[in-house]
Image 1 (cartoon, rainbow, N blue to C red):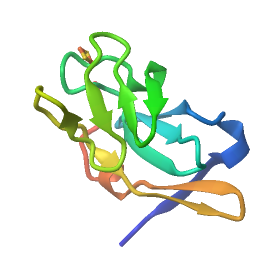
Image 2: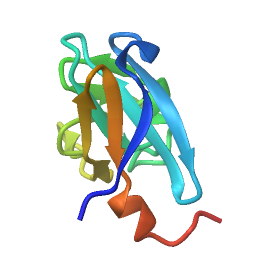
Image 3: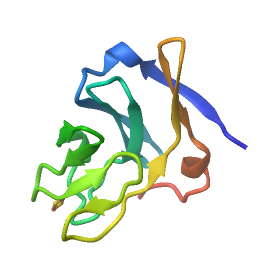
Image 4: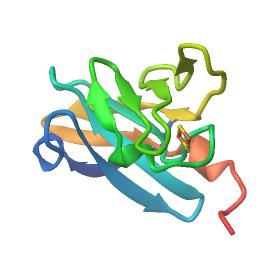
Length: 112
Ligand code: FES
């Protein structure tokens, strides 16, 4: 069962930008693409935990600001020669608001 949480208005996030939602279970980066699609990933690169929310958003991917790995916003998979995956979370838009499904966050142990 989904647990949708209203986290922000779409317009709170610039196009090709991101916003961080802090939860007791870790930070989640909410991304907005150039065409107003919204994605949510853990804000930690699978390489060395770089803050993906500070990366460069292009098409439906983000380039990590630390060492340049490229991560798909839809699957969380690393693209190109490197390997890895970051957890994704369901998001949806409703009447201009961004709703995050907190189900996966709530089933995780709290961040230290
Ligand atoms: S921490 Fe993201 S590429 Fe190294």
